[in-house]
Length: 248
Image 1: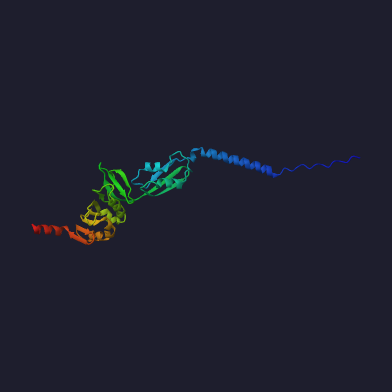
Image 2: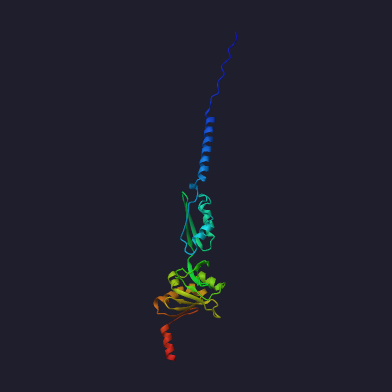
């Protein structure tokens, strides 16, 4: 009598193959969505706004950012754009904000102006606290001193720019003009004319230390001549006029 063959077991269809197929389909779907997204207008820069600048043209800031409308929104990063703009010498700080979809806002803080200067062709330029010279126009509000008679590469002028950034704003705004006034004892001597009608003789190397004395005289005395060098002197114009009349 023939023996019957035992029935072969059918291999069970485990969930592994189905799970792999599902994962592959999901990945393909995600890749397709990414391709469609990055090729769509929603992934592009639509607007670039610039604010906070006074002396730098907004077009120059946009150019230094290295981005234009239509570029990818996510690249380059905010940090990279900030680093590019920060290379502009007048820029003290910059913040870039990205708002999806497509909006980029650039906020710039410039070094403050400490003086102005008239160029040979009659235009006004602003001198910032870090020594940068910006602007080439006549639409500035001249609320800081004008520098007159200075040579372009005069080291005392560069130092004066640094010192003026340490002078209190109220006093700095009262200075109307600063000219070089060197002497044998003080090669960096200067003469300052104020909007309150004082004439002040001091030195670039002493101005920061003497600023308090100058401000005290201006606030408490009538207009006159002030000298703040090794010693401090103040003579009102009335006394000078009286001396002149007596001599006559």
